[in-house]
Amino acid sequence: MTYQGVLTKMETEFTSPIQYYLVFENDFINMNQLLNKTITIQFVKYQCLNCGLDKPIFRQGYDRQCFYDVAQAGDWIMRPELSTAHLDIADRDLEYEKKVQLQPHIVYLANSSNVKVGVTRKSQVPTRWIDQGAHEAIEIVEVPNRYLAGVTEVALKDYVADKTNWRSMLKNDIKDENLVEWRERLKSYIPEEAKDYFIESNTETNLEFPVFKYPEKPKSLNIVKQHAYTGKLVGIKGQYLIFEDETVFNVRANEGLVVQITIH
Image (cartoon, rainbow, N blue to C red; front, side):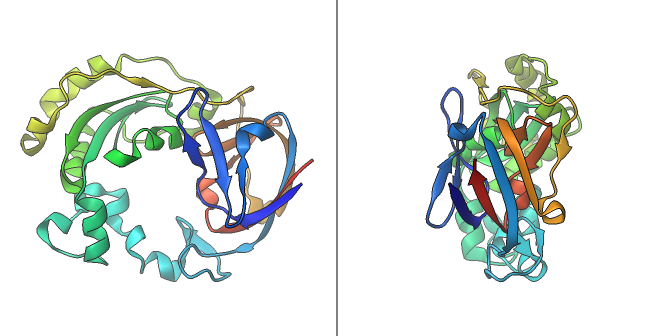
């Protein structure tokens, strides 16, 4: 059976283990059902997620021009502290920015390769943690806009990591941490304007990923360069497909590529 479509990040369902879905325009694939099956991924062409043209993808599924034009790729996406919608100041599209920035945001701790601090919209919990491959996470602050979440994250980055080591995450090279203790330890470093939003009592969320075999030395698949790859799918974690030969494919990093997927 063969499917074809433009890659976007896999949709997920918070179950135990997590369910993954690859959604194309006219089809979707429950990726969990492909575990222990051999599949071929073949690069067909580019398709920018904004303009739809066959132009090389620059970042986040957009070609270079669209990346610097669309509201969905503004600097405030990656750096929430740069948000300005709460001041009625536009970056690229004030209406869009108000819709996204002026809603409840969570500052959280997640443990995927190590404990890290991050920011997400409240509506994206626990999706964000799943996408990062975190096996445990906890909310520490809930604020009314993205800017406050951003400045809180910046303040806490001096005391806790803000990046995930993708290799360690995929190797499952992790240790359990007491995130409630971490939350209490970091409380005093929360900036004054966000102190009232600290979450006093909650418990950590645990996540289970559908992985039969973790790679010892994960090697990343460049499907554009290789054009086609065939392997046995043995796990899914974060937004990565894990294959028996220790090849891993980051679906999210390949958004905007049209691929053909054949199930053998």
